[in-house]
Length: 104
Image (cartoon, rainbow, N blue to C red):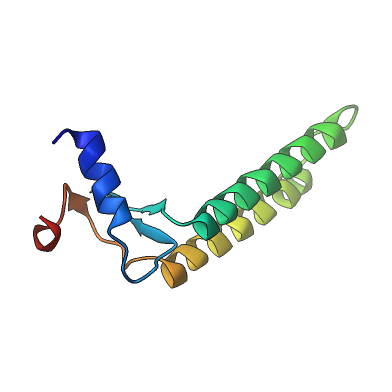
């Protein structure tokens, strides 16, 4: 079985109904249910809205530290919320390299 097939098999094995499963290689999560994908989409969309609004604001204005904080703080907050959702709706994160022994 090739790596791609192992990945798909691992992600489909989700009896607990997690929105996010541990990544097969490394540390972090991968969305596995539609709810997880919606969370990822909303996160990316909100970041893009912040970037676009930032680009519109800085045209003709000087780039001061206050403007940077007003840009960075919402991104930090959104990222914290995203990580919190992943912790609540996903598997417990841990370093993993390949299919866990109990799933082989």
